[in-house]
Amino acid sequence: MYKKSFAPTNTNKRVYEVSADNTKSYNKYPDGQIKTKVIQELQNLKNTENPFFIACGFVRPHLPFYAPKKYWDLYDRASITIADNQYKPINAPDELVGSNEFWAYDHDGIEVNSSEWHRMMRHGYYACVSYVDDLVGEILEELDTLGLANNTLIVLWGDHGFHLGEHNYWSKHNTLYHSTRIPLIFKGPGVASGTANGMIESVDIFPTLCDLAGIAKPSQLHGKSFTSVSTNPAVNIRDHVYVRYDDLIDGVVTLEGASIITEIIATHVITQTIIP
Image 1: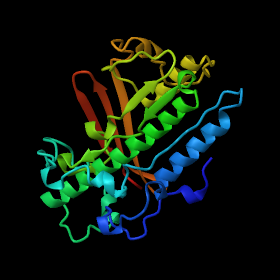
Image 2: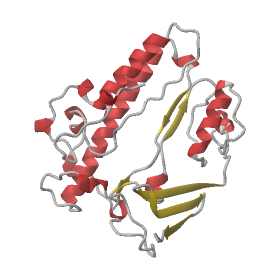
Image 3: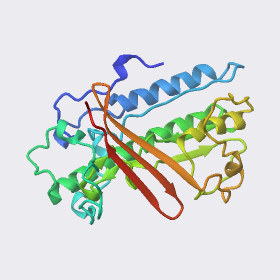
Image 4: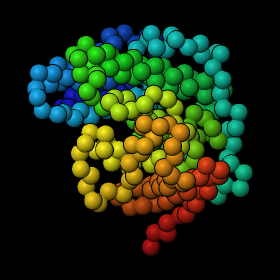
């Protein structure tokens, strides 16, 4: 749906955006442009009689941390707490690593892994989350304005979690808790209000959407529908979930990680692939 012009750009290679550079208007950021495009599509679809599907993907809070100034101003950096477990998990294998993506950016002279740096990084993440939260809110408001909210299924979903300095890791690229716990919110017809504490896998989202929309599910699906959870948040459809991460370099798997996560413990199995 979106042209390449909507791809994020990072012209100065800084990992975060400082106020002196932050003069762009709210909708000049790539995510603001995506929000505008989605609202335009909704307005065009309002008077059609056909069902529609829109996948709206926001870049933030992915690195680099770029967001309008007012979202940075929501937080006092000096008062931001940082992770108190900046060390590798006890008995973790040597193969356990985190994402090194932040090294691709300039840190503006701030020493990496210093307390100042950890606060700066968390500040950027918080600002970006607040920015995207507003964008999502604008889309939901437009659905209400157009009279579509009561007949539209909405899924807010993230494809991975995000370390914020825990174990001295940032972002993802492993199977630890902070990398694998994702946001997931369903809203719409047939969905009860409330918070569910059960476990699901991302592959469960598609069959659930099929059930809620009254669409036949393809036979080859691996996921389980959690429609029962959507009507009763106390229901749990799984007693464990499976998580896997493969690190690829030039299309070759160089590191594999897998987790079997239960309600009680998380068992992490990490192996190093031997390249002939």
